[in-house]
Image: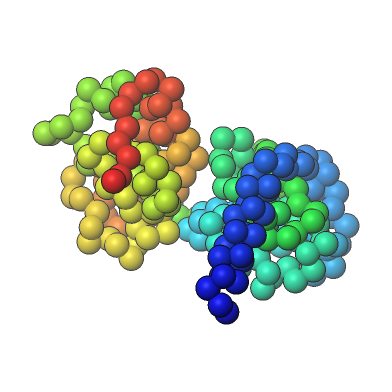
Length: 245
């Protein structure tokens, strides 16, 4: 491909992404998704259900029949799973406040998918309705929550190590001063990088903390807590964050 052609392709992708970001993604309710899912076995579905969370969360519990496509991998992975771009594709994650389903939906639209919906109510609403979930949960862990102001007062010598479990691109945008970034799916692989002693888990809005705690407990960490409400609560409390250079 010639250099000008490369620039044209890059410009076209950027334009498509910007257009998708400007569009409002339509939603689907728990009742509507339930009706579609109960129409027959997943192999017969006229739609594709996409779990936009991490592999760790998916393995612990997901809606039966869902494909795992972590949000950031949508442009690469979705075409291999859903070849018909006119087919209905529904994205879900951990409910309101979780941004991964919307991110995946917008990336799908930018990639040319014409019939995309977000199940914004997400897995918590599905479980709350008494509907089936598949997976292998890790043993439960007691996880104290620390309010943003209380954590801010504890930072520094003698305070907890801050482990930010978000994706690297999210961490680069902003994070707590002094925190280290080990994404949820990388905790096992990067176990040697996890500090010993007291750990405070940090995520976006609090949805992934419990899952991360179960993984860390399995790795032998016992003194665990989590930032209540995640980075969004920290920002709402007007506390400082740091962006990487």
